Image 1 (cartoon, rainbow, N blue to C red):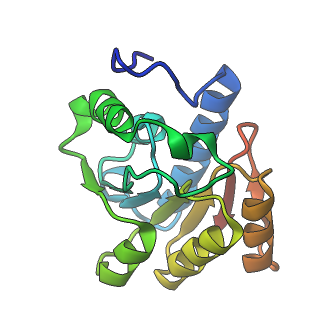
Image 2: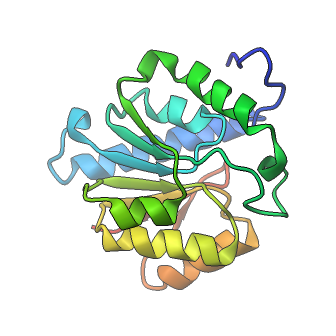
Length: 187
């Protein structure tokens, strides 16, 4: 995958990551189709995209994606990505997704602000924003309130993510993928 020339880092560091995310995408789309929703009609919300690699992969199948990514520093003192040059990160997002920009609605706000103002329904919500327990818990709870068919995310092995996912989905199977993604079928 080609990066914007000034950006020297990338989170997709292995084929395992790409393979796992592709498996998640295919499983999610198959489940949504079982609800009699055609692929062109699937509406997806992605909370946190950072460099845009996941958006790039999602947009290979999903043609209606809303991305919530504020491109702001300092959101998590334990996440090195929080200290990156966000101007370069945003340029990389734009570069990777330039061919699909008509399919992607970018909202440069934090997730709390997005949920407060949102009036749209989404079939699938993917969470890979701030990994702090309180933040991920709130993102999951706000997502549940929208009643999507699928809620999924990344970094399940992160303690905050793991705890929030397992607490919110005690009675629902949490599917895991080799790239550390997770998925819950809500409906």
